[in-house]
Amino acid sequence: MAVTRRHLIKLGASGALAVACSSRLLGQGAPQPIVFVHGNGDTAALWITTLWRFESNGYPRELLHAVDLKNPTAQAVDGVPMPGRSSTADVMKQLSDEVAAVRRRTGAGKIILVANSRGGNTVRNYIKNGGGADHVSLAVLCGAVNHGVVVSDKFLVGSEFNGASQFMRDLNSTPGEVVAGVRFVTIRSVDNDKYAQPDGRFLGQPGVATGVGFDGPALAGAENVALPKIDHRETAFSPAAFAAIYKAITGNSPANTAIAPEAVSVLDGKVSSFEAGSPTNIGVAGAKVTIYRVNGSDGTRLGDAVHQRTTGDDGRWGPFRGAPDARYEFVVEVPGQAITHYYRSAFPRSSDRVHMRPQPLAKGDAEAASVVYMQRPRGYFGAGRDTTELGGGPAPGIPEGVPSVSTSKLSLSDPAAKTITGRFNDETIAARTWPMTENRVSVIELTY
Image (cartoon, rainbow, N blue to C red; front, side):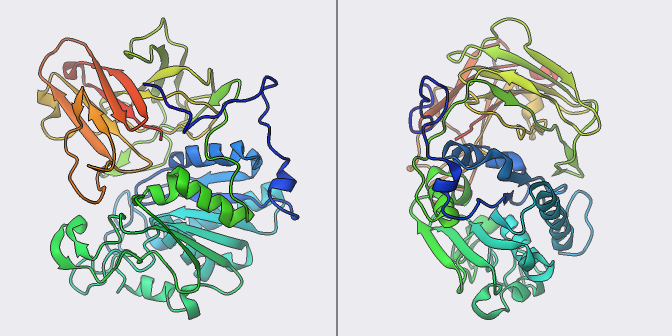
């Protein structure tokens, strides 16, 4: 089952998208650069579909930027160093440097910031305490934990995610909880965000009141938008969220939320790894990436490798010129890590943010004949809300209720190589199994 027209739109015979010019789409003034800021433990790669949708609606590609925060996972107690993790001051400085670089490259006086989850903390801190108010015209905060995930003097004490922390109280101390001179828009789920729940179940404290309601991401002085059914990540990365972000920025609804294919997809990205068990966005030197074109129906390779590169100090593995309708297998080899075979949907447009990390193995994986992970980086799996299948049956490990997990796993005892298909609603990807005796693992990575 292929990705449907919900996700893609066709180009005319000329290969150009029939849309109005950027100046007409975006109003009287010239469009401003946008910097997208990811959340806790994430990467700039999560913004790929958002960037494609902006491009497909005429927003200039050269004005779209997504920052990779080096150590994206927050410290347990803000300001107390932890290997591989970052403080609020660390990520604020990185965002400040990125904004300055974008302003230099584009000549723009002010820019727009769009953030998801922890990225909202970083954006608000930069605007209020890092000089950002002079350089930012609009902040769009998607699923941001603007009042914490809990308000407590017993749990997550000292964490930036605690609404009772000094950090969070400082952010919300201004009149209207916003900073004068900067327009703020928040986008939240009506009641389906795992981190905006009255009960502490998703924080490991079931039955304990969090002190945070469904409207926790809203700010008193902002334009607050609530969307039904979407989960925590979908507040930023879903088609519905894109439409809300686009309207907040341009004042208009997008012509479409689909993605217009290009004639050639030029792909590049970064291989990163882990530090003290935490994911990083720091490029790994000496990683080998090999790409094969595969049959979309069964994941088998269609000939020899079409690209291979060993990364340098920056961790970049490209560029690679691909076909926008082709399916590929990416083999990522990082010394000391499991060899990871990524299977992806087609890439309808170019991107230099196709980032990859080797898949960390869970307890018991080494004893299986083969293991297939299915991951959805831009959202969660919701039992009852979504159709989610792996290996011909319901995907394992998806709880009822609020969507809260983005990974499912199938462990196989049969050593024979076979095709395993993963499906999430309209997106279906076929993968091949690989032997754990060779320290190889398969990952189905969903795009939509």
